[in-house]
Length: 260
Image (cartoon, rainbow, N blue to C red; front, side, top):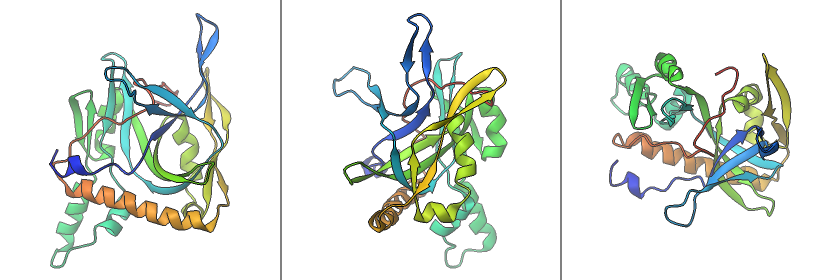
């Protein structure tokens, strides 16, 4: 990690993930309610933080999507994670061809920005494009994750940039929803519930997404927030020495879904 990268603050305040309900068979009680959780670090040195559920409905403006790996290796008891990469379309917009740079070199440069380094704990599992290393990472407990940066609209009208990690059941409902990019650019998105799903003998719930109208001031604020996130990625991508760090997730384990 370079000196400069240690001085740049991340633009988001919290990382949110969908968690299904967990039932403790011994106590016969629900140990975790379904919902959107973020990890709250402890203010006491040496103590673990807690998982906090954000009350629904949750309203946000979508800003930017990326690609990464997440997961948990049960045998080793460690997380699987990677850096985040942007799509070729976004990279073309954020990193235009330099004067005098030929097309071949330009595309080689863009491709270099799309390389993922997947890790399991401190061990590097694989380095390469997603499609090329997917099988290796999945075999170790990893799975596809789509980090999405968003501007959260709080109940009191204030806003903050947050990061959603969509994987497992949440990616199942998010992918078809986010196909309408024109709506995503001008509408707010609300999280207010979930839908029952099943695969084989496994019953679970996936979060639902809905477009909602928001005040024009939030659309304008989202444009500024998106630029903040873009500038953050421009710095990270431009700093070739930036270290791949573990994603801050709602807990240290990953729920196992039927399609993983």
